[in-house]
Amino acid sequence: FLSGKVALVTGATSGIGLAVADALGAAGADLVIGGFGEADAVAATVKDLADRHGVRVAHDGSDLTDGAAVRAMVARVESDFGRVDVLVNNAGMQHVAPVEEFPPERWDLIMALNLSAAFHGMAAVVPGMKARGWGRIISTASAHSLVASPFKSAYVAAKHGLLGLSKTVALETAEHGITVNTISPGYVWTPLVEKQIPDTMKARGLTREQVIDDVLLKAQPTKAFVTVEQVAAMALHLCSDASAPITGANLVMDGGWSAA
Ligand code: NAD
Image (cartoon, rainbow, N blue to C red; front, side, top):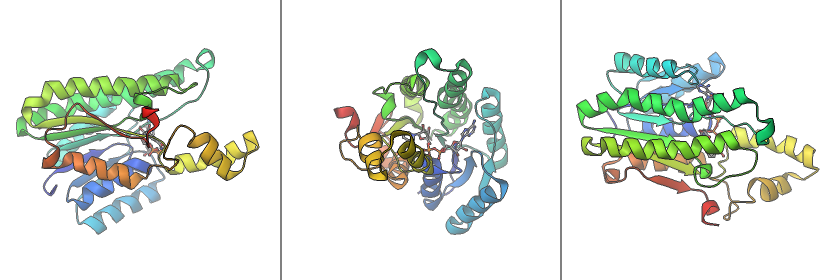
């Protein structure tokens, strides 16, 4: 149901973003995937998506901590592909430190990527979406859009902010066939999370199972990781006509974390 549509998914060279791009491509959307990566690996990902889904796929490796680069990326996609119908603001980063030791430059980078990039992206795609009378803007927030954890001041502030931004733009675009929503996963099994396990085992003298159950999944009542495919299925659903009334919403997929 997305054939003829163009989806720009940031942070789609790995993890959640790649799964979202895969789902949107499977539904027929042409794709621009953002994110960093080794050139051969990125080229292989682009080819794989194009071959399996029979859609046009391009990669954009812009550093989205620069607002002007975000706007330039959208302008390039509109010029090369003619339009952006679906924008998925997914690129994100984390830094863990007590507030008094939190490096100010890391704070600025996290705010720039996890919050301001979504602002610049939305500002850039909304005029075209309004002109066509249809659009879907989805941002990957987090359970940390609703609850805090110690030592994650920048991430939690940015993800809370992303909710406010998304709700505001939802109101501004509600009469134009555009929906603006956030998806808030708890812990998702991505390479990023998997890579933390050996270090945490060493640092805390725990087994792999203890790290998973007592550290990572401590706050997640289901004691199960969210999968990237589950997040992608939610993003795809938000692009469907059935989701037309869903706007300004935060779709929480946190295994009960924020209910506790
Ligand atoms: P990931 O590290 O696998 O992917 C991050 C993506 O962002 C990569 O494609 C990377 O190249 C890109 N990226 C990083 N810095 C960038 C920059 N400066 N400019 C452009 N692109 C950049 O991470 P993931 O786990 O798939 O996370 C994706 C999103 O989901 C993030 O916003 C994250 O906060 C959110 N999230 C993740 C989890 C989790 O448990 N993994 C949970 C909740 C929310």
